[in-house]
Image 1 (cartoon, one colour):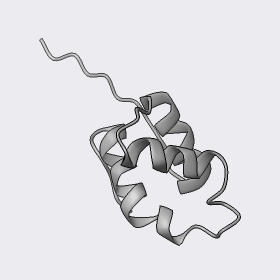
Image 2 (cartoon, helix red, strand yellow):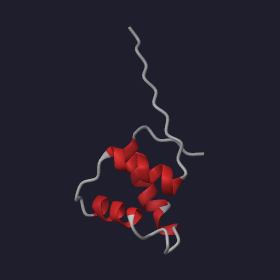
Image 3 (cartoon, rainbow, N blue to C red):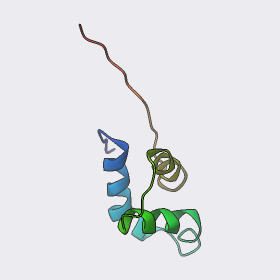
Image 4 (cartoon, one colour):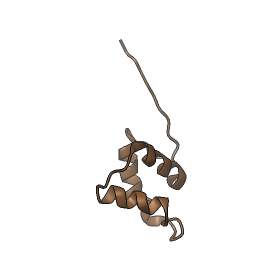
Length: 69
């Protein structure tokens, strides 16, 4: 198990560690567009990063909001 503090941090890890392992069929379409947009700084939203992580990386994303007075 690996945990991350932010979506961009998790996405960066996915790009470097899991994307290269995807089958050629999965590297088409959404995954490769996301990889190109991220790698070449063409802009990718956090929402799209989340979608890619869940669909192609089997990530479970939870939000934690804590107020400490």
